[in-house]
Image (cartoon, rainbow, N blue to C red; front, side, top):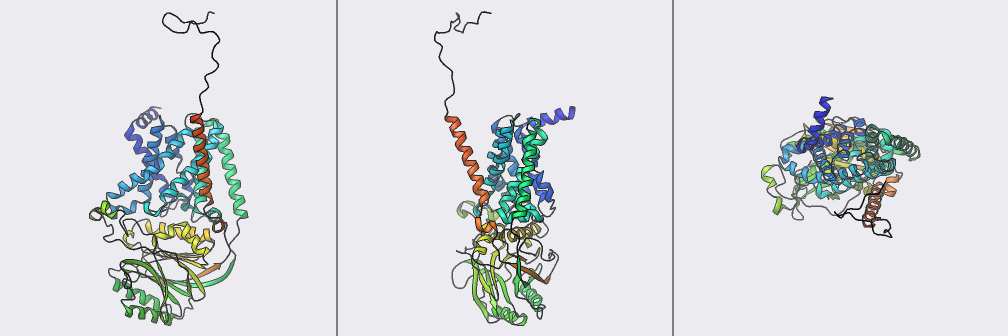
Length: 523
């Protein structure tokens, strides 16, 4: 009892409470790779919700949301600290503010002893508000959709089926809804009935969607090889290793060979000797090779990151220039204002240039849709490539800067979601690991190539060409969440404008005492 009172006093103090909110917000990181405790995602938000709902004021609840958001952003992106140094705390503080309205809404609907109606509404409003936060921070200029809560479910079969219905957005909504229901169940005894009803309804809806969602019908196979050279200091040494590994694929009957991001450090128009060496590898192996060039282009100004397809006769002309660049890693937003970031971290010294459109390439009998590194985090990019006719999605990545962190495994896991969402297999090829391949249902199509591997591996990849509900209907969970929040805003506005009831005026003025107060009735 004494320790409980002490804990309560600590939470009543501003700074300890803010620290507790930050720690509560950081808890979901354990559900992401590398820990990959996927089940923990369904309870990880409960302490944060419990803290915000007991805030003494609405302003304090918003601050709890903000501090929790800071903790979440720092935890999910902690591996950026060696590159961004102190700048990561500024970014976390700015983006963490997106959760302030979520904290305010938590208190608004669950504060005190909420009625069953308010608790039921919270089960819809709070997940919708969380999706709104994920939508805003998914904008490429704010860092993109890294660490979406639904992506913690990348290895759960039923969740992957749901991703084919509503994408990672639907998974985020359901994970938050379960957390809200559990928080109500634990802390609000009077509202346990709607909480239990919500859990039952969520389970029923999930089961129905799982049973209804069309399964990926495999209608073919492709043999795709991933070449992962490992850690090398310079582009020449790395290229030599990639060349040696690719030669090992001769006679393996492969349909396509994929190298990782920045696998070629020179523009192939400037270095025809490199182009000829890659073409010779294509002739030797009997497969076209998708490389990735990170260099200043010879045909236009600026540095580009480009997926380039090379065949037995040389460059095929198929090329995709990366469209969504990593803030600070590949360009500095508002460089005139924030250029000082290059002096305190490893921010880009020169901005790379963007491509203008996505490209589906013809690689032999396969139509392939390339994505470069960071772009594999964006659900819409995989969906658009599928709509444009891609048979296989290909992600080319390099995470060697973060080799000993959780980043490589977290990045590799995203491809499972993109595969499940689109019903297309996805290959995630990296320079230094983790490389991975997933079938059209999001399940692994073979073992990962870890960060310690330097190898070429051939994967037997199942192909499917059906249309998933997510590809057909797009980001409908986001549209539904925004509709819920719009209706809430209208209802709150009408409530604020509605005149207060004052009751009818008395026919006879009340008697006044000498002090001007209403006389007490005589009993």
